[in-house]
Length: 284
Image (tube, rainbow, N blue to C red):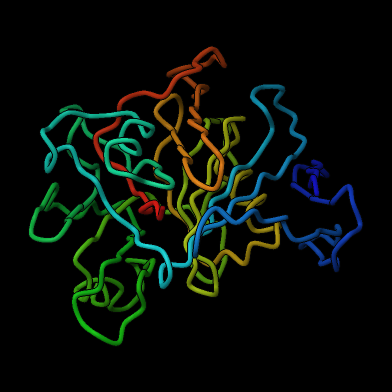
């Protein structure tokens, strides 16, 4: 199935080119279909969703890796814990045997420290909670009886309290607030995007889009698709945005390029070294 995206009155609408599955409806009434998922390993699947866009840049594809954290092991890999050398997502994947890897967040000018709070076990990469970043992701439970991974809205009452039950916690810029609310206004800035989302079934989605969109447009696309997204956060944009997949017969190392006012070109074709990644362990 190849999904298509249309812009109608400035709003993304999606339809599918093959009527092989039960249809749903986007918010504006446009018909949609479920993505066709390819299993990569237990608890990990992958889909590519094509779309049309007013911006004629990039491949106009949304790459989505969907993970059941109860069946697949999520890991955070930080340069400050591993020799202090940034690697590309592909290099992180090869060195640490990852089925998939994506940016863990934007980083500061030292090329090591996450822009928001970041703790992995007892190792604290950034102890400062950034006031303007309203989303957090946590996994690796340290107490029984909690979900294997959660995404939290930090501006909700006691929003940060559930995070105390997890060994790995990262704070980033919010894209979508629960339960599926686009929190961005329409604006002219666009970039290639690496994002993280959680759906209503507790699954985690690694999302990559090389074609530059505004975050208002991207959120509209994600919410119109039948992905059941409840939360989403920004992981990185422009040429630093990366997604690697090395499992299930796939070997992909995807890189972003365009970013308004920083890298206004589609010329970048290689992944940049990044200090921190979120990955899922590969099962042989």
